[in-house]
Image 1 (cartoon, one colour):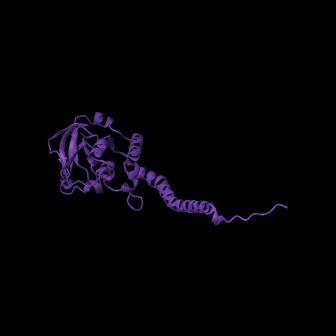
Image 2: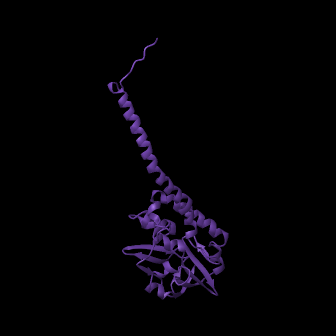
Image 3: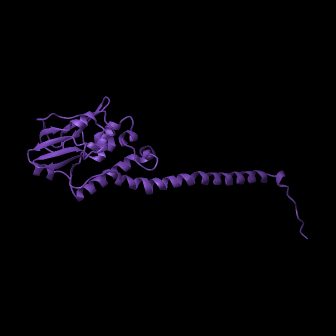
Length: 230
């Protein structure tokens, strides 16, 4: 009859194996504990926050848009112009706005006005060619108007265009606006990368002043890239 041999596990290295196995089991449980909230947070960002970004920038119909994120709206023989919702949310609240005076000539695609942020200045391109016939004095006194109501009380200039039909033809309108903004938002998403958490406030609303959240040291360069300014 075959004899049975008792092996004292404590007298061998078996205890070491058990300790290793026990450690691995604890590690796996701990890793799952940590990864579950991270996975949930990732899914929340990718499935909820990122898609919401596209809906956060308003582009009203009936307005013409320059790719430098300025807009034009024809009123009789004049054209009212300003900066769009994307631009004001990208740069945040300026400390001052420098507008050309009545009688000044502005060129489509060239500097139309300047936004000031302390010692930093950012140019905004004009969406049309023409002569400035009226300046919004209220927005000079209260620059926050461009953030509160960029298409209404935050308008900047009234311009007498040299050729309104030609100028407006060079701008974006209708379905082209949606395609353009989708491309812009996709580019912004790529740039966000690991800074998603910085760009969104609690509740999933992007912060005003996205460029500063993305690049605190070189935010003005980010802004100029999207605003097509020099």
